[in-house]
Length: 92
Image 1 (cartoon, rainbow, N blue to C red):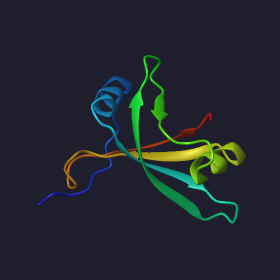
Image 2 (cartoon, helix red, strand yellow):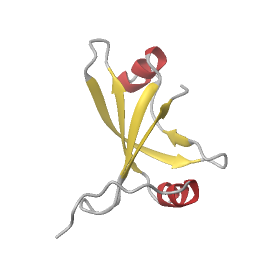
Image 3 (cartoon, rainbow, N blue to C red):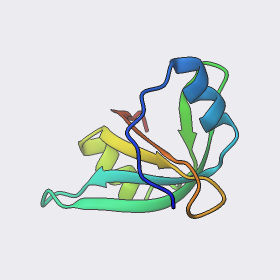
Image 4 (cartoon, rainbow, N blue to C red):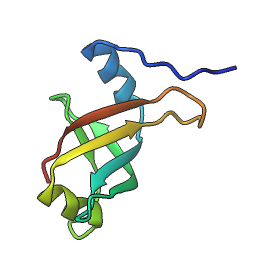
């Protein structure tokens, strides 16, 4: 039986985990305060920033221009595999 855990990891371990994965859930905030969750693909750049692919006119990009605070869930290929949630400020 798998049990959810709240583990803290160092930056190196976190970057290694994220660098191997491309399936992400990006959480932004709509104008009315509700969350907008978008499945996206992404990758980590050489500076340790998480890059997300989208089009400029998409809701997630519009939301982030207004409110850059966001969260990203980095998923494993297996649905019940490990994952991590990150919080940060986006640049569009």
